[in-house]
Length: 233
Image 1: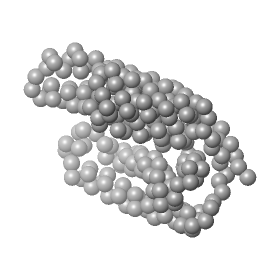
Image 2: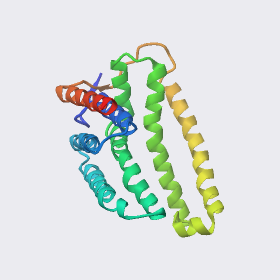
Image 3: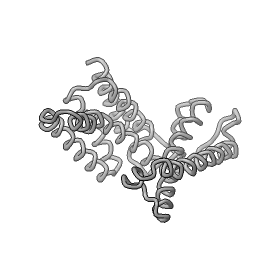
């Protein structure tokens, strides 16, 4: 028995194509036109995935950084210029990558990715690490929010004042519970993988049905075009 993928418009594989294109393009040394084109492509993907707020926030942040890089950084000097250059030039390159990563982690479930990978006839040694990665990163984000909230309730909020006054104390209270909880999450995920039979070499069925549509193939084709354009030009 299967259930159609009705949560998102795009297939998980087309989102992964966008993410791969953003990963390699980000570190290829893009021109201004290539930056804008990549961000526009990621923004359209967010809109298709019904993430309008994220698309708007990323676009506004990129526009502010882009304008500051053109008109503000050149007028500064010394440490302020280095800080502005890091914020407005270097971090701007990572915005499309962050947007694409948000798409692949927040708009599709792990079950949909597993179903898509099984449809591609990938071996379990490939499916399991990728599926765990997509589930592990959002879980760590949730745990980090819980830890920061608990610190805030104890009067140890993560602020510049507390970090400057008690840096080692703050670092200890953040990292120790975070690392311990990360270890527990890894053990739980390993047990879940074993319980679901991923360690067995036999075909598995999936409750979720994914299918590449015309729109998905368009996004895959555009991802390939953007990737080749950024790598070769």
